[in-house]
Length: 417
Image (cartoon, rainbow, N blue to C red; front, side, top):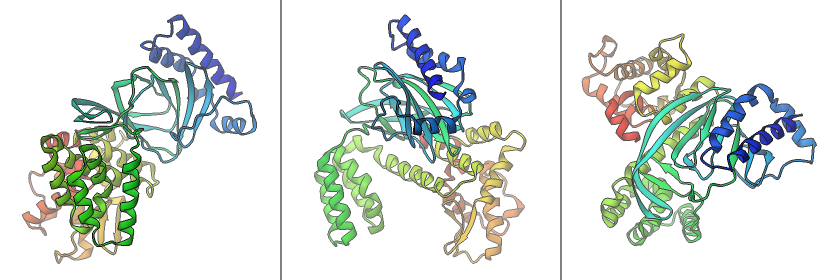
């Protein structure tokens, strides 16, 4: 009986925590050790658990949470509970927790990144400016157990690689004083995802209506709002409308008005919005890419801050081949031809250079390899291109989801926080 497994785990955690007088500081280690004594990855059959859950009405109280696809509560106590999170196509935001405990990779694998938030400045109780910096990144395979510490000491994100990926979480209900549970927008912002300004929400909906109706005064109205709104609401307005303003050619004007109004406080907003677009683009790609190796590649492109770190993680997961050759194989497999020409993910080879289409793939691959290796001596494979064209292709890659492969290590670190 799967219920019996989690009842045993919950009872073990409860008894040991009680002996420590329910110390929040000691709970993560208690949870981790209890999980590792009898690993769910080795003792729980997910299919059997789901069938039992569907057919047995005697289940713990389920939450209203939208976290997980879905979330199942397997054990519940007034002080803590055990949840099973199933992820079909999920990527968590960079976030901290208002609870503590431990999570266990029961099935699948994930890219796990840790961050710090430095030089924090509170703008409102629900928005902060600062520097989001990646601390380290690792590959979590089936069977790993990781402690969860509430608050800013544990800021992290997970990019789930397999479908499904399943995690077991032993967690407190809530740790006092740890609200709000911020999400982090690299490289410079922290926002409270649970804060909802209903007036701003309605204004966004009305602006969407005006955009859909193609009202001529849409851009002018947004610009006027940016000039008048406070920092928090102005930022959310820019974030919401940047796509439509970009299509109309007015986004840079709106950003300039925002920066003029808010001065030094707004210095990190442009980079944060730009990084948000990049991360969202990669998230959307994983919806159409099913090959596990390619999804792993997307996870690295989204999360790593340096080329060296990316190649290290590739070598860790695929030690039988040289990391560079593995990356180049992936980029070749991800090439696509469409009406706009040859593309690798969102990097598109220029069609107006007068170069035969049959040569595009070879040149694209050669330029990418050249810049991954540091862009020193130009190889003979690029003799068909001028120096300016080689640099132009580097800039094209640097503006795409492949950015971390071609830019200098120091720039990558600063750019991704």
